[in-house]
Figure (tube, rainbow, N blue to C red):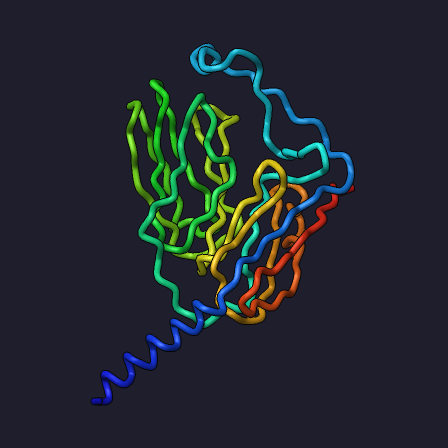
Length: 236
């Protein structure tokens, strides 16, 4: 066996071993305290036609048992120095009923984000990352129009707004590894197929952590599912 073949074989064995001992990180984020009431949205005539009743902001979406939705959960430490392939599946950010769907979404650095307009009216897509060189701002006047963009550096979270309808907001968590998730309506999340190792997992909520980096938990992955639950407090 030549040197190149031996190296490829060793790499394949290493990757196989890593996949065998990979594990999922699952958990739930619970809100402690009473959040402020949501702000009603006053739709204009065009957008009001898509709704049978009034809308509201989505700052705190809380289940009956306190499960907190729209929390961006990601590995913030332990994956440094490792190379990860950029996912080929694009992230979808849609504009439907004059609301961004989803409200919170995750993407890896350089992953394609497909931004769609499902409404038969004009929208405008304006991303405001800290790095102004990555800012973009364009109109989508056509129903079904899709444009693609990428972010080239990590940031949790990047604000995206519509300059035509000021209530339309979405946020993108951009990270340099593929291990992230967004909590569902019950506050639960799953980060799949994490390689064995020691990690710090961070749970970040847009409003509760506006002035701090989020809640963190140190975990160890070694083949079996790992549980990482978080409690987020409403800021005083």
